[in-house]
Image (cartoon, rainbow, N blue to C red; front, side, top):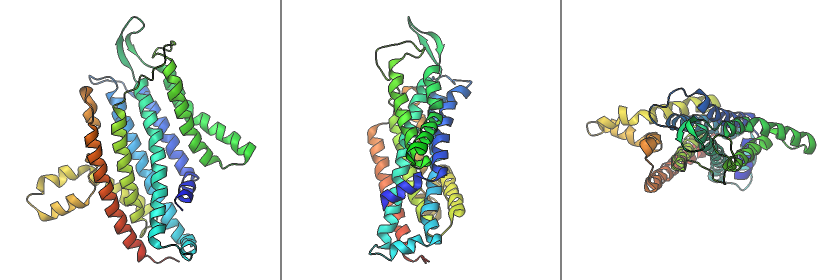
Length: 319
């Protein structure tokens, strides 16, 4: 059931549009940055992480609203539950399928972020490079990879009658991997050089944290979708997302003074635990022990939200 859920999710046109839009937006960031603010690549990194987070928010909310509440409305959920399948298993399989799609989406966004940071204009003073140089060759390959992926998916659909949206979704990931591999053969100015990816490996830790946040958000979205349709689910997820970003400022200062603030500060997901892009400023990095602690927080919070979701779904009327 989880596999079928994931397959159904990537066959939704909105899933393809969000994935392609995310990659194109990240690829376009180096072209729109006019100021470096004292550090090469910082604005590109931060913008790419934000795009990854926001597009993932909409993908998680839409997938949860479509695949759970949509099936409840259409009556397909009752057909499945009439078999020897418990409500808990049905609910968890839906979450597992959505989480798998979100993780694949995050892989694509992470590759795009790595490549976009490489493309960003940086200052070099070597025998081959002198001054501010942008990796235009990699930037062009990255920007056009979603479009080429859609063309290939169209050919596959025409020749082999396979669904266009799911084929295009996977082709985008494949083309991103191809661009990642090919870019290692060239220097920033386009000259042939011994193979080296020349990527900022510090991005991996931050991207993993953003991906964990999206998994938590998927759990929140599918729990909400047990009671609400797709639009209320999207709205509530957006509200929780916004308040979760501001909990430290709004509630964190008053935890010692108010039990109410302490309660909501604990209940609301604190996205600041996952948003640590500023840690890369000035050559810094995110310790992997912090990633582990944030991962434990994500697991505990996700389990707690899913328990509430199963309790809610147990008492949901399925037509």
